[in-house]
Image (cartoon, rainbow, N blue to C red; front, side, top):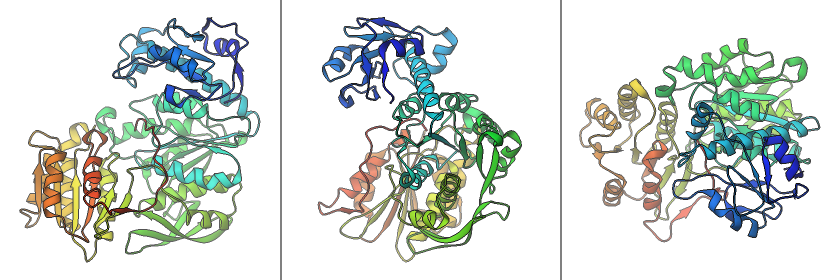
Length: 508
């Protein structure tokens, strides 16, 4: 974050000083977790499920914070933010558990204003803001873009899926005068949300990956989802002002967004119309993709170290951004071959000492991502027994029964050996089990269990060394508990090296 005095912060957010002169200077980042504060930082007081950040104000100062961004008077130097109108407070409060009086919503609004000020100041210099959205793949693509851009200059990107009204400004405020690239992930629960996030940190380059069924229950239809995802394309500056829309030409709903932007359009995909495309895509026995990267400025061979063919589209989107920012094609191809998975529980592949392999993709799920994960499982398990441990896919509305049924049937068609559906008789996941049971000649190959404990017990009894197991569901199902338990079965379990998981994960 750029250095600001408390008086400047109060002016930016429309707040008032409390127990402060105004000349005190914030020189480090903002934090809503008092344990993460650095000397010179600003503590953001937000309500939580069990505690209210305002009660930690004095502790935050003791930890080195200069002041607190708060909604009411606290026992510490602070900038007190003004309350919001009732409707606006309610909308923002959706993202904050425990925000019964709208205090947290007011602090979030102030945080957004502060982030907008900082990004505006930096964008007038050498900062390029890149925004990424889509129904699936946002986090993985954000991680890929960051890794391609880091050799070009200091790059800031959010940890995990830190992509909502809190995570978005928090990440933007990590940028300082030395930052050259700010890569942001934009999520939405309804119309207008992406436009609002884009106004906090206006992107020059916007990436739209796909339009799937995630949150169709909230948006009403895929067309409704496309309308909201396209808000990113609409938010970009014109081509004359450097705006670039990176759009997936393999998805008709995304390709159509070219008509909604004044930015220059760069298409990616396997479609022949794509500016940056993949040709001759092949998979190895671990479902890792290789392809020929074809661009207007050259070509190169890419072998991804990531699991799943769906990462080809993510890699193409990242390549398009890197090329726009001056990275040579040869470097893009080479760096894609060396990328790492940075966010946990997303195609996290681990192998126990006895040879059992676990694909932990349990962070979240929608029909498109589950289909991709099942195809990856099928590719990786050739000659080995395969297990799909699946749970509910949330927020599908009226499409829920059909979507879960189709996933169950797909597991059979892909010759997955065993399907374990976690959720119980009243769960929205039940049609997944029924669909599998009614497809072909399946019988005991599919089983419905009530909860994660039952799934763990079943797997402990029936898994064999050298099996391959996929674990995937929406976050609410907490199926990572199954993956963790299975991997902990032997003390000598050996997981593939991964980067340290962040302590923060935000909204979808």
